[in-house]
Amino acid sequence: MPRDNRTPSPDAPVYTGPERLQKVLAAAGVGSRRACEDLIFRRRVTVDGRVAQLGDKVDPTTAVIHVDGERLAADTRLVYLAMNKPRGVVSTMADEKGRTALADFIGNRIEQRVYHVGRLDADSEGLLLLTNDGTLAHRLMHPSFGVPKTYLCEVSGPIPRNLGKRLAAGVELEDGPVTVDAFRVVDSLGRTAQVELTLHEGRKHIVRRLLAEVGHPVSRLVRTSIGPIRLGDLRSGRTRRLTNAEVAALFKAVGD
Image (cartoon, rainbow, N blue to C red; front, side, top):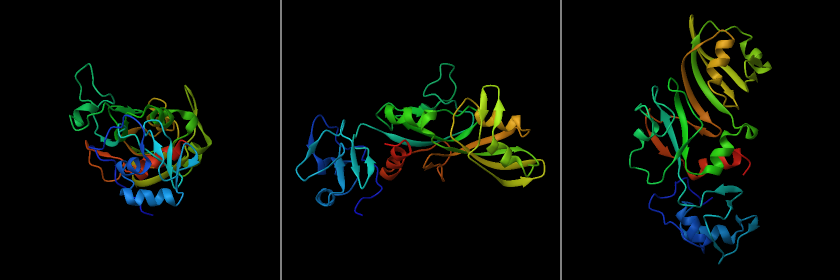
């Protein structure tokens, strides 16, 4: 497959109207124009649901383009970032109380104005997504799309053997029941333990409230993944651009 995992160049052109499809694909980081022409020729590219042809022109700001069935972020104005939010930072771009906020870690490196997808409370850390793609952000946050999120938590121990089954069966909170999609004990050191859990909803403080309800209050919480995007070895306070493959995976996660 000639496509690579590059992100679109920050210096990629901003389109003002229809352009040749191979130029749009190349600017989005799919490959060279020659490689993109080959993809089109081999009928591996669709535009708005139809198979593309050589010579087609598209408006990348409105066209829905798929390559090998994967949605492509062709609009070079759109930005997709992963950030490792440090503990003590509020999940807002700017804070009226003067507290350290997300924009303090971005500075002037991103020309476009981006917004955070969902939140992590100030005492929590880990993966946040930042984007100016409002449609994708809405779908990632809306519970109807069921995008899973995984957390690594340090809690009070010891952990009973049946805790995973109890969480999977559902726990009643003051604002309704919550169920966990996956749970495992990562490490146990007597009075403390590390557990990992995955759930697909984002009510306020849901993980902390859930674990406190079952008798294991959280002392540290790190979000390690949102859908297909993983925190990996991204250092605290750093951001990185998502690859084309990661953006495509996010679109797939919300059924686009």
